[in-house]
Length: 393
Ligand SMILES: Cc1ncc(COP(=O)(O)O)c(C=O)c1O
Image (cartoon, rainbow, N blue to C red; front, side):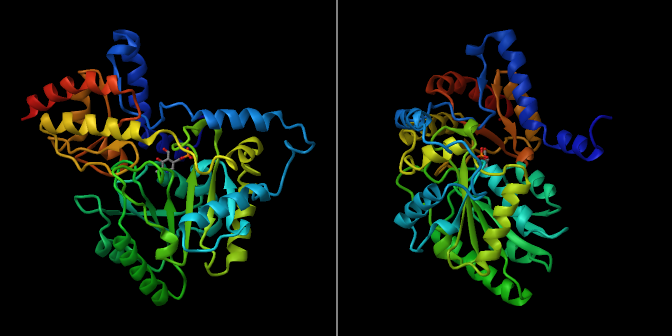
């Protein structure tokens, strides 16, 4: 076999989204792309804001020598400072450029964090359902996921998290707004989580980190506020990107920000900067770093995603689906009317509707809909959703 047994097995396990993607290609060829309703991928369909494209052109024109050279592994100091200033506008904490590391998207950032903090077999507690790549990111650095189910409304099950803590616990990894449920964790929830982690950290005699993955922070609805984990917990690290809010996932740009008050900050940040280098990223893309410096306040038009959420929720509700209304991100995670979510997803496929079984996200009995698609795709798909539900009721 040309690849390792381990990678082969991981490919098999994480193949749900890929399977749907391939199914989509086949069905589009057979039935015509306009007759296939593909809700399988979280790939934003909106184009980046025109200001982002203008800034990209501007920075590309800059002929000052050294713009495309290697740089400090943490990134351009001007960009790190701009991110720190931006963070200071909505966090109580005082950030400086030294608290920020520019990364190759949020995925790159998560790998940097885990590479830096994990000893072999260290455990990271992950509330489920969850973004499935977390398993691979942890495995890359010999970490072990300790998956803990959320409550039925997708709020954090703090008791279960507390019970999952062991001597090996190194971090808790949360994601808000959440993929695949659209949940936004409340300030009180984070405060309780913080108390719990303080308690266990003191007992273990070492800090348990709270890693917060926040690429959807700006994609929120109905005026909901995403509370700051920095305000809630000292040993906190945020990782984010511009993939979703600026529709730039292919450009691979994001950052890590550590709580300015975090313990042993110099060593922790130094370790992560070193890992950015040795993971082969070396540094985040230079051109994008120079661009996003001017784009920190920007985002795509979030009201478009909110409108799509509303169209979907209304249609699914009328068809008899049970779900929690998403508060952010662009995913819905309805209940499957049968226990076997893969069976239900196959039934939707017969209507040329492509979704992903919840099992693929550690949330069996559900399925995920990514509604980063045009309104008309949602509108045309809704009768099919209803027909399939009618068969199961
Ligand atoms: C929850 C979550 N975290 C991280 C990522 C990775 O983001 P990026 O493309 O910035 O690496 C995604 C992408 O879908 C995601 O949904």
